[in-house]
Image 1 (cartoon, rainbow, N blue to C red):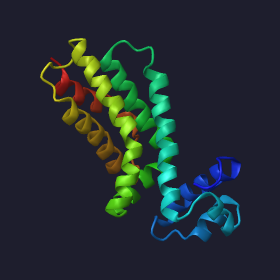
Image 2 (cartoon, rainbow, N blue to C red):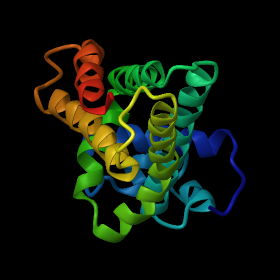
Image 3 (tube, one colour):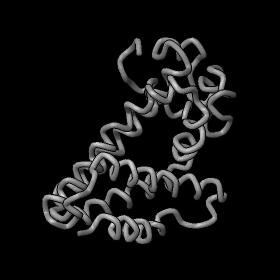
Amino acid sequence: MTRPKNEKYYAILAGALKTFAEHGYHKSQVSRIAKASGVADGTIYLYFKRKEDILIELFREKLGELVAKFHASIGDTADAAESLRKVCEIHYGELENNVDFAYVTQIELRQSDLELRREIGASFKPYIVLIENILRKGVDQGIFRADLDLKLARLLVFGAMDEVVTSWLISGRKYSLSAQVDGTVSFFLQGLKS
């Protein structure tokens, strides 16, 4: 990024999200992103060197916001099982309420090249660490199994929620994503509990 974050920066990210969701990442020209953002084509390059940088920054911003919501929600929660429920509620609720972001994270990301996915993957790390910390807390509290492989379990938890969102999108959003929280958490707890 070449310029500091300001109103135009956020307008470009919002326009990019809408454009990527509507046309797909690969078919989204910078001119389309500029039009959706309400800025001139050249303005994009004042903030981003290439289209890939826009996608990377979009993930950093959106996932940063999501992780902040998780931390705010579970900050006072003593029980690890309840913290896990809150993460699942926020994950499903946020993506259900922002279908464009859900589409870009679930569909478009998977169609990107490996190097771009690696760069974007770094944005997911705080989320994965948060899940691991909840699982560790559950083990320490005696709620979750003492023999739990935390590194594997954190990926299984994240991957399961990720797949539920993908299935919801592929189905045409024919049901409530948020209504899947109870079943998801119940499934997790059966595998995690002592």
